[in-house]
Length: 437
Ligand SMILES: *Cc1c(COP(=O)(O)O)cnc(C)c1O
Image (cartoon, rainbow, N blue to C red; front, top):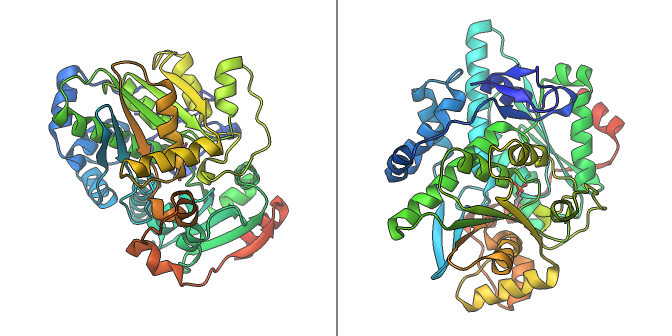
C-alpha cells in the first residue's frame, strides 16, 4: 500500500518512505491510499486472537511493501511487550489503561513500534547500499512523547535523538524520564510553549539543506507508524469487551486529545470495520476543535497551561487527517463530537473516580467527564487512560489528598541529574545546534 500527501496529492511513498520522511512536501501529512476493510466474520476472528498475532494481521496490509509478515511479527512482538488493560468502572463504563509500558504512557505503543520499524529500515538500507546512514530524530514534546521516544530509541546505533520541550511547563517527573538518559538522547529545554517547539520542528523540516545534512526525521504523532500502532489497542479494547458483552454496537470511545493522533487511530479502526458507534474528542481548555465543530471556524487561541498538560495544544497537528476522514466519508461525518472540560471539572472527576476506588490522573479525567456529559441511553462508554497517575504525582496527590506510590520506572530516574541544554524559541539557534555536532 502507498501513502499519499494530503496537501500535495501527487506525492506517494511506501510505508518505509512515510516513516523515514515523517512529513511530506509543503508540510503535508501522509495518509493511506486505501484503508483495508475487514468483514464482520474477519473482525470476529481478529477479536479472538491474542494481541500480537491480531496486530500483525491489522498492520500487514499497510506495511507489506517493505516488511514481510515475519519481520513485522518480530517488530510487533518487541514493541508491544506490555498489555492494554480494560478496567470496569461501572455497569456502563470502563477505562482502557494504556500506560503499562516502560514510560507509563500510551505513547509507548507508537514510539516503540516506530523505533523498531526505523531500525529495521536502516539495517536493510545499510545491507543494500553498503553505507550506514545516520539519522536525526527531532521531536517536540508536551510531556509524554519525549519519554516514549527517548526510551524507544535509546542505544540504537546511528540514530541521534534531539527532543525539545517547553521549559517549566511539564512535571518534574515527566522531565526526569527523558532528560536523564544521555548517550544518543539529547534534550533541549525551550523558553516557550509546546506550540513554539512544534513550529521549530516544522521549520527544520522546511529547511531542506538542514534536513538532508543531518538525515532529519520526526517521531511526533504526525508519523504514520505511530498512528498505525495505536489502531491495534482499539481492537484490543473491543476484544476484551467482546468476552464480557454480547452487544458490541453501542461502544463509544472518549479520547483525551491534544494533537489528535489517538483519535485519528480510533477512526482508522472504525473505518477498518471495528464496531465502534462513535467517538468523543475530549479536550481541556485548549478548545480549538470543539469550537471548530460548533462554529465551523478554525481559530486557535493562545495555548493555555492546564493540569492535563500533555493536551495543552491549540493547533493540533493531526487534525487534517481527522477532517479528511470526516469530509470524504471514510467515517460518518457525525461520528465525532468534541467537548472541552475545565480545570474544576477535571479535578472533581479525579475525586469522583477516587471515591469509586479508581485512582486516575487529569488526562483520563478529562475523557471520563466528557463521557458523562455526552453519553446517551444504552451506550457503553470507554475512556482512555493515557498516563499512569504517578506521572502526575504532585497534582493527583493534591487533588485527592492522599499519597500515591511511585512505580519502579519513575523511582529509578527520579534521582538522576537532568542533562538538558537551555535554548530560546529561536530556529536559528536550533539550526546551529543541530549542525554543530
Ligand atoms: C499525548 C497525550 C495525550 C494526547 O494525545 P494525542 O494523540 O496528541 O491527542 C493525552 N494524554 C496523555 C497522557 C498524553 O501523553
